[in-house]
Length: 433
Image 1 (spheres, rainbow, N blue to C red):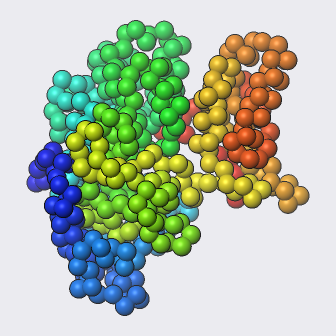
Image 2 (tube, helix red, strand yellow):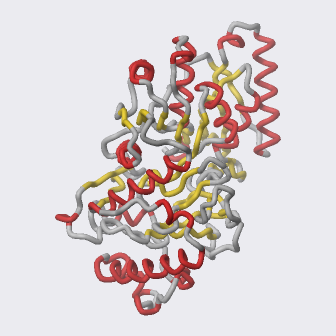
């Protein structure tokens, strides 16, 4: 069984690098022997495991892609016999096939360790009641947070996602002090709590949010709405699940569990590794995953890494919050548009509108159309037409400044955009339908 070792987070860089090299060499050898896709790519490049001597040689190795999981669906990328796999998780893919990942007992223990580090880094421990409102089942969020919470001795409230009024009543009755869910669901909970008039009955003090992009303005809105301190957590099913990186109390980037994962930043077009501090596509290599290891997996998340020591004393490098995904980016009339840019504008506008929005892109007569539906709040809805028009024009102007492209903004009635109890669906791109 893996043992939680908090001291590994403050390991000197030289020792950490040595540990990474040892684990990388071992992992490359395992995967060459057991994973057909990886072996073929090594052979195609004329590489042998003996060519890898340290982390300096990582850039020689071939990339892995999400399409690989579809091509080898469901178990073709596993590096252990199925009798050694104690759990599978999955997320749906755009082609209809699920993205399937597997875990050995050691993988589950290491995963719990990473989440235990995260909880400890923000001061969560045995006295806390953690309401896990991530989805359970095949989604990695629920059980990932659950096992980590148990590892630090906290009391888990495994409510999963959905049934919002029951969520809130349970939060009150059971005395939840920590909330784990997607940021969009946290916003929905905050909105419903305000409507119910029960904010003063909550004991929440901390929120841990992930599984979808969210801005700093959204963090501020959640903190105000729930009267908590909100922390970011990063992960993806293909690498492990939540806990690949996490914020500490300093909130100056998310610490990557470098004894388990190596992070690189590459140019998304050329695949070349970029200099330290550059903005580009995030790539991960798993160092001690047994069931479903991956070498140089292209996440499509766009961010940069922080190499300076953190004030908290942890030595592992940090990553900035991803600024969208290269595969979520919309290209509209030749301009790159990220949904997070629109959210940021709406949160800064505040007041008359909510951060609930939906982007609708279509193509008419070979030209892209770009519409954004934004919910009004109750006060603006009850105001006159001139006030609505003025707000609509103001948002349109601010979006043009940020995006460099014009969009048709439509202010819609309160509560008319469907709420999400999991990941929010912000984009409807009819050009792909």
